[in-house]
Length: 164
Image (cartoon, rainbow, N blue to C red; front, side):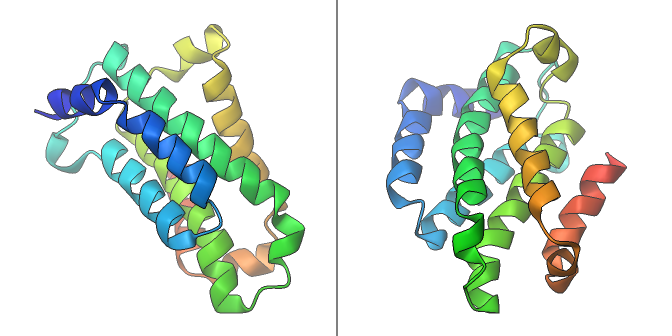
């Protein structure tokens, strides 16, 4: 059922549409965070619903779609780092730290669900995978420690990633 759902989404061009939506509405956190939450749900293995082999083309395709979109959002978060410093704390969380926490959770759940064999993707120097981890680790690196601890969900994502 899960495989069929993903196949239908990719056949209909749904992921490409999401990419266009994110490129146009990236400044609207309600939309961009909702899309990130949708991606998080796709890679979260609740009740073992994801039963793909780690070398499955479906898992690889799904990760590549998600990585491409996450890379775009992450690159914008990196680019807008200085602009976000002037925001009030509640707006800073919604516009900056919530997307960062969601990106980290997406990475963590992708690793935990064994959706993709990352060693194979790294061996073939898959650009989306390399950029996905580069963006994620850059976001972690440029986030000041005092701001990480100020928002409860951000350090939870960091801890989940480290334990995987």
